[in-house]
Length: 76
Image (cartoon, rainbow, N blue to C red; front, side, top):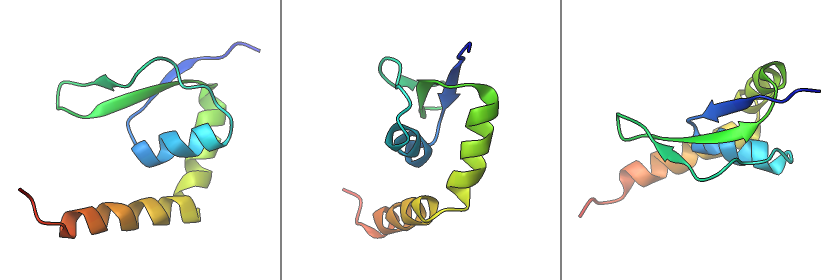
């Protein structure tokens, strides 16, 4: 089985993949627009299946709640 190195720009989905036992490759890399990307050893087909599973799960809902709570915090 040949595994691919795929970029994951979503922190919640990256955590979900780690919970599923996928290996994070190196450190996150900051992109041109200031957003970070995480890289995993995962096949594209498996990535796509888990992406769909993640976005219809409680993990995604929890991540969205955290993001919304962070937006409510004062910025200093």
